[in-house]
Amino acid sequence: MSLKHAILVLLERSPSSGYDLAQRFKSGIGNFWNASHQQVYQELKRLHEAHLVDYQLETQTERPDKKVYRITRAGKKAAAAWVAEPVDPPVVRDALLVKLYGAELVDDGAILAELDRHIAVHETSLAEYEAREEAYLSADEATRRRMKLPYLTLRRGIRYVRGTVEWLRETRDFIAADRLPKSPVPGKSRRG
Amino acid sequence: MSLKHAILVLLERSPSSGYDLAQRFKSGIGNFWNASHQQVYQELKRLHEAHLVDYQLETQTERPDKKVYRITRAGKKAAAAWVAEPVDPPVVRDALLVKLYGAELVDDGAILAELDRHIAVHETSLAEYEAREEAYLSADEATRRRMKLPYLTLRRGIRYVRGTVEWLRETRDFIAADRLPKSPVPGKSRRG
DNA sequence: ATAGCCATGTAACCAGTTACATGATTGA
DNA sequence: TCAATCATGTAACTGGTTACATGGCTAT
Figure (cartoon, rainbow over the protein chains, first blue to last red):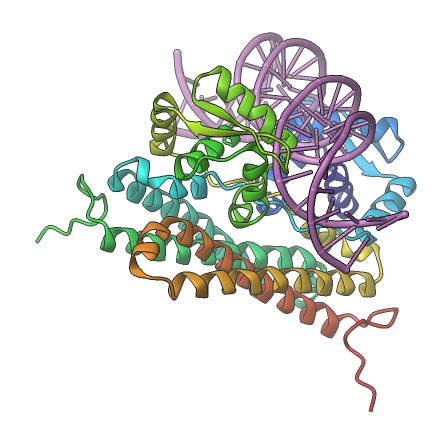
């Protein structure tokens, strides 16, 4: 299990509430690890029972109170031990590839539309990632030094998404050129 | 759930025993979908109960008997319906990135060694993928036509692994150059 | 009014992993 | 003799998703 350790390394960087952690998973690191708030709260509970984190209740007037979690000395030790261990690359489970593999079962139009949709989705995240990269590269040296490791993970996201879009386009062209679609292909018409 | 559909599209291509399917997941399509034999057998049982697949018992003399599964008409219909549906890109959960993010907790040497290990692992699969690509490209036209969709998924694997190795090298250099390791860095010494 | 953000949780369910179990044949 | 390949499964557990639940504040 790594959610446990993902939370520990996040807390090591900065103390957060469960809500904050869920937010951090949604954005930035969502690019390399994901967890819903439900998962986060339960994991925090377990980590607290194991004395790897502790928290202080922060009472707020205009908003709900929150528990701000910090990593403990034991937690830091556990995190360091885990980081030093080797891991296997993640196993891939990409439903789009299964669909492509079974594309003969359906109309080409459906597949092409789906590929286009994925291209659009990935280009949106790419724009976001690139904006973040620019922000990093134009930051002062101290910030750049501090944010080096998060930046390296961002690079991974950029390369991943770029590679994915390239492959999607290649695949789209391969299918569109070789097998004529039975229904109109979205995004191909150019009136005029 | 997609294991169900992954099995259906595999069976649509060619009837297989549970064992065969598990093998097919390990190699070829293992590049885009993974499942253990335990999972496969249980899923086949469920698919059979739902009448989406059926099987014939093949008795063998020198080996254990086996059940050869085929997709049914209902199964084909279900698979086609699923293939036509849109899916979200898979969520990423890459423990190596969590480790990199938390790399400050440990010695640089440990991280560099881990990056090197991943480079080696990925280069091994890359060689395998490239060999398969070459086989595809030098096959006769009929085979190339028949294997087009599997080939497109193979392309995905090739691009993915190449991108990953590039990123690993970039990251390795970034870390090795900028922060001097506290212990000897593997693969950096050049006696002479 | 209505949606969205802040903030915390429980419960039921589904998917995936690990461990356990059996047994013949073939090759190092 | 030991490991690998072929072939099938069950059981327990862990991790992750979906649904449900609450409630005030802020901006449109």
